[in-house]
Image 1 (spheres, one colour):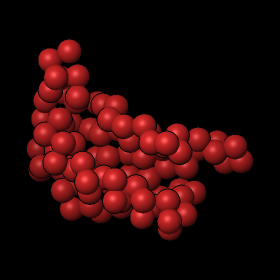
Image 2: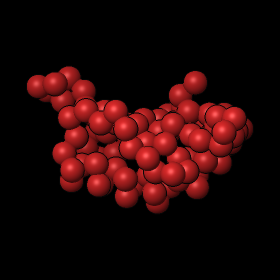
Image 3: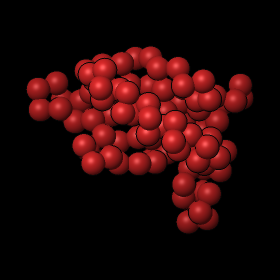
Amino acid sequence: MMYPFLTLDDSAEIVHSEMKPDGQVKVYVEKPDEKDFFHNAVCWLPGFRWEEINGFSEAELARYDEVIRSVAHLILEFSQRGGFAGAANF
């Protein structure tokens, strides 16, 4: 299951998985693109390991890395509570 987390001002969407048994959380970043349809990448927490990077520039990836690092504690918490809605009891 993937839970919505954040939409950035450049239309990039950040979603995350539930916490896996090994303590990792998959964070997926996707951004619409007129030419390629979508650019996307996966970041695994808590190690901030990036993989499956498609279409993002180094600058874009650095920005997403900075954003994810600044909210990783929330993503890790929400991943154990059914996403933001589950953590907020919605």
